[in-house]
Length: 146
Image (tube, rainbow, N blue to C red; front, top):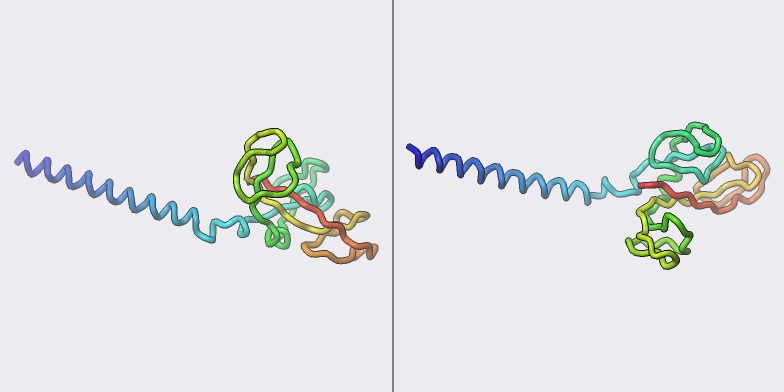
């Protein structure tokens, strides 16, 4: 009787261990799936300060306005690694060290947009003219903490 109980207990533990391994593989596959890709992430930007961008809704840290969801900016976002202290020039797509200060580079989302130099509320995901004054929009880059 004891042998049957021990065998049953060993079989149950073995079954749980095997089931746990399968869940770990499923979790790893889900994390690396295209749905987890940063291009699917939402981007929120301040209507008056387009350089203020976030991956989450919130308030602009310059003027306090609510950040607005921007699908056009989300489409232009790519993952890059930046130095938290320096503009190291270039936006590497792999982790590493800052060539200026030696700090670890931090994963960030980079959003490319165009902004009117006179009317900062006028933004677009592609180059063009301002709808208010007709001036050429200037390229702008925003960083989204990930």
